[in-house]
Amino acid sequence: MKKIITLTLLLLAVGLKAQPPQVYTLGHDPITTGARDFNLYGVINGHMNATQYSFVYSTDPNFTTSSTTLIKSVLCDSLVVVYCTVNALTPATNYYYYLTAT
Image (cartoon, rainbow, N blue to C red):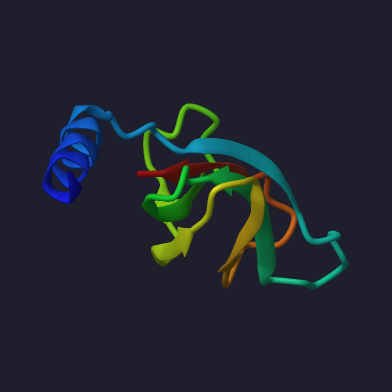
C-alpha cells in the first residue's frame, strides 16, 4: 500500500506545471533634491518556486537602451514586497522602470 501511494504522489507531481511568477511594479523612494540613489519596489508571488528578479530602468520610455539592477532571489507562495537599489542616477532626468522575474 505504501509503494502505491508514493507512486501516485510522484505521478501527480510530475503532471503539475509550474506557474510563472506574478509581478507588479510598485514605486520608488521619495525624490529629494540631490539624491542619486533610489530603491525601486515591486511585489512578487513566486508560487513556491525559486524566483529571480531585477528591475530594468532607462531614460528612454521605449527601453531601446536600458540598465538592469543586480539579480536577487526570493522563494514565496504569496505576494511579498521586493526592492533593488539603483545607483548614480543623473539629477533632473526622467527614468522609466519595470520589475521582471523568472
